[in-house]
Amino acid sequence: MNVQPHSSEPIYIQIKNYLQMQIQTGAYPVGARLPSERELAEQFNVSRMTARQALLLLAREGLTYTRVGKGTYVSPPKFDQDLDALRSFTEEMRQRGVEPSSRVLEAALRPADDEVAARLQIAPGAEVVVLSRVRLADGKPLAIETTHLDHQMCPGILDGHDFSRESLYGVLRREYGWVLVWADQIIEARLPQPHERRLLNIDRQTPVLGIRRTTYSRHDRPVEFVYSVYRGDQYQLRAILRHPDSTAISGVVQAPAGDSGTG
Image (tube, rainbow, N blue to C red; front, side, top):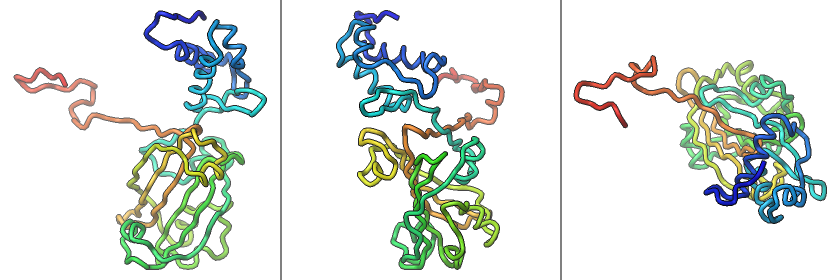
């Protein structure tokens, strides 16, 4: 590949796109080492700063990771979460052939603050279960989850369970009869806080996805409020969007008379 210096596309973007195509086609498989800044600079006859920008952009998009003093390597594919399906972390990982596990940071009973009380539709100060865990996929940290449950709905749930191995949703279903069927969640992209960087083993430039979710039973009773922080370089959200007009089933919307149908 030759860079096009007179193109409207910056040279570092051209190099980044070329390397991305090489990764996607398997020329650089997962775990492979990419050329260094010096090697890229020589290959494309550009400055090392330009080569560095291309490599940094690949890393920020989660396509690569660096090993200090060793180079840049191709990352495994990101985990997809379908936004139209409600699954526990354990179910989701096992469906993808990955072994889930957790590291429990906190498992305690605490009084509900105003936000938790509003989400769970209980009185402020009511006793809630707080379960905070680092969620791991094949032993690598992927997310931090802090779950809040109305203790009256699941009395004694912290007794006799090891939530570093057990699925919380499985325990709620088996022992308390709570089947979680739908959820309302808000997602934001941001940079990580210092304690999140430490727990997820990421640097300050790696984005995270903050997710606030209230999960409901079949009778529309809120069972769980959870705040999660997912690694943005390892996790992505996927949604299938459909036109709300039911007449668009075939992909063509019939415009009423006098309507141009554009927009």
